[in-house]
Length: 457
Image (tube, rainbow, N blue to C red; front, side, top):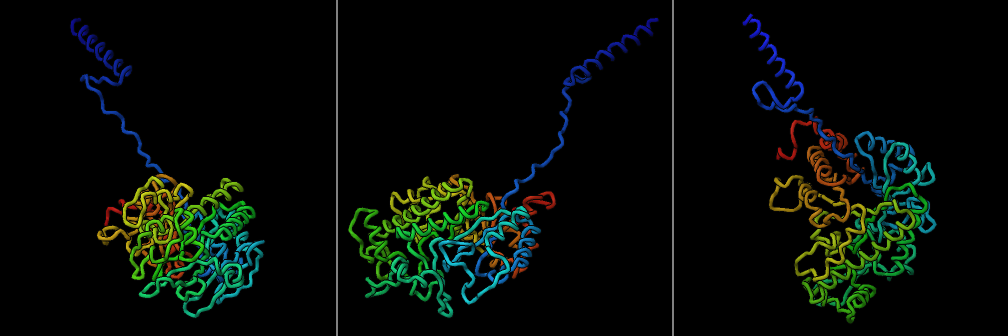
């Protein structure tokens, strides 16, 4: 009987412990907390970002003259992971690749003339892209209204068609060298310049650009955005552009000073004159003013239409062409900057800045001595923009082989808000479709790759 009572007591105690454990699973038979259950870890899927192909008007002019040509290229774009295009609709000659009431329709570009089997270039792209769920950002060469073949001397475009109206509003550069302190060259006569640009300071030029932007946004409400290329002064070529009366008088008005001599800005020996920094601020302020007017005009018509702008990822080089894509919060240092230069920063006027990481060097480790790598540009853009707008990383397909193209595509998607490759003809000619898709998948489907690729270099 005592044995039975003992066994029953043991059984009762065991049941009590079992019940306690069932009621409170923080206690086990040894008074210890059990290991917490390990949850199933589901990796968070990367955000689907814009992945864009730039379609240059000149390089693809003949190929895209037919519906079949456009359809075939859009299929390749879609099949290789992309969901957006940047489409040139006003190339540098100043003609329109859309039905314009302001500009001539562009059937001839350079030495090429085409006959199309559709009515409206931009509209056909919009219709096909809507079917394929591809967004369209329309791009314009904002201040470019003339074209020159620098090899043959052929000239073409609105500036040459209407020379009496536009010639004196073209950008002008100084001619440097001993004894040349007062000499200038109009860009329309400059044999080294391929895109003939009007000065953004001219009120007539500003109004003309605003009319074009207004027309595109009004006639084509389905575009996702308007991209502004060449919204700047011309690249340096032995001097600084903007030395015409329009801009020298503009400088005087901006600073409330007498009209400067050119050699007060840039010396005959290409040195920095006493008014150089003020000149740099004036030109950047001029570009910002036009951008601000464009944004106001576009948003009044279609608040959802995004404002995009491409520029080189090397911010420190842009002062020379009047393009301060930084935030006003970014304060630079250097002899070329005034203490108020930061006020010319225009990042907050953009919805998207497209940073041109156009380098054949992809990884910083390839050359730690230079800033000119894709990896550096896509990692440092917000040091300048400081949260004012989104940024898409863009790469130069013409400078990359298969492996580097994949790496550069991946880096843009990993470190920026989107991706663009320049451009369609180069991707075709260099056979970069597979590596483009691979770079996209490395970001969007990381589980298919064994390790984080930028740890490999």
